[in-house]
Image 1 (cartoon, rainbow, N blue to C red):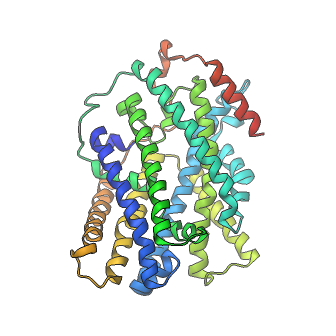
Image 2: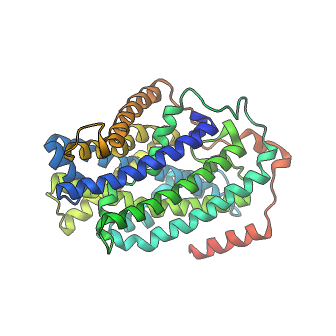
Length: 403
């Protein structure tokens, strides 16, 4: 979707730039924590900007993962309903094809129980599963770029270098890369808690995420050009079994990612209202309240594109660009625009510009939402793509393993 805002060449450049800024600011965050003697994002901001900064950060740290969880529910509802519609006897009017039912059931059976864990390390195997599924999803998108892309006519000016609303793309990219809200938790889980080890882990993580994002962006846009939806699997035809397998992997991956964001929102609530400590009853009650609120909002609203844009410019951009740079500059003994402070200054200025401009553009030029609609090219007979034996085997095995 970012290429729709920026144009493919500029979009790929911005993707690399946002990845670099993300990598730099994650390390900057831990450096700020070491300088201030703090071990959490909230305590770092409180030590540098007082109670006002603490409350502003707490709001942003709550909003980002909270809105992310809403988007995850939207994706799982959109994605898994189309998976179930490929089962015999399941048509558009079937309960398994109803997004509200799927969101509710996946919440009760999967996301809520996983979110009730108290220790984030318990989700290690779940996170590994999500990474493996991402590889399968990427393979699906690449295969369909080669087999489906040539049958879809490109939109007008599809390969233009840049578009006027490229700033909105930075917000969406920020949403994709941000992990600052749980960086201190991950840093605290390392056996060797040193800046050099953290830098190595960060470079590997952000670098691999950047490569995967570039592959998704380039192959997805090359397939659908201007028709690309906020959820790329909304672009694939309902009778495409390879895409159905990709949807299945995507839905499971999203469900396993949801609890990680719930951990962050619960920690923010704990720090603001419970002095950082939740007893067992409060832990369950807060988790239930957060998950229930996300589920209710995702049932009521289903336009993913606008959710991604607003969360990117309002929450992710200040958490990546503005606050880590501002904290480091406040703690540093050097003057602004001198020595090591030059890059944080530039990132801070860029963050303010992206946040302000992106928010104005999101309000003035809202994105159209074609949720659940079958794309026009799916009606063409030559796009009825037959399943391959490999596709059938992968989908059958994945379905059996999920039972």
